[in-house]
Amino acid sequence: MIVTVIGFLFACSEEFLDVKPKGSLDVATLATEDGVDALLIGAYSLVDGTANMGFGWESASSNWVFASVRGMTANKGTDSGDQPDINPLQTFSEAATNPYINIKWRSVYEGISRTNSVITVAAQALADGTVDQGTHDLFVMQARTLRGWFHFEAWRMWDGMVPYVDETTDQLTLTNTVDIRPQIIADMEAGQSLPIREIFNASTSLMRPVYGLGKSGKWPAFMCQ
Image (cartoon, rainbow, N blue to C red; front, side, top):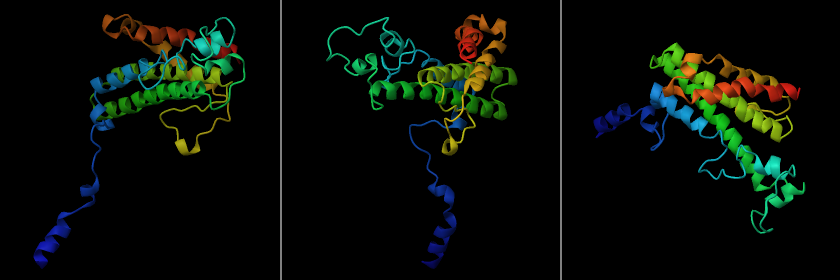
């Protein structure tokens, strides 16, 4: 009996309590070229602001509600019971609890989170030797340009003072007390370094819009300085 108990005690370790969650992917699993590419596609998928996470008209990058309707160049139409949360936005009487505002915020910062995941996992893949330096850089340049775009969406929506979140940000000390235009511009400029040959390769056609975004997207931030 004593021998059995002693054997049981020595057989156990802290690793026994380290149970990886089911149905989830960690950095080690995704740190391959295919894994990073999948994360990047996920970031691209939010450029239009919509997703099956409850992101629809409220967060669309067309900004139909926050720009066109609110700017009186478009009208919601129908009746007051259809999309009623647009009504106070149109009359500049919305409350902070308006779901359109919350969903827009969640959408842009979800996009930012996805780009940061690309950068983090790409760095791990490079360290593991599953991607080379050139492939790593292509992933990071695209992710940074998209991150700049998502931050710009937040910056112009909330009048400049919004948190800038990158892959090194400490969530416990995150603030929104500084103008983040320099960081937006730096991220946008990353897309200008994408190699032309790769951009116009049919297999990497997703790079074309992000290259153009890097070229043109920084100018609104410059103009608002």
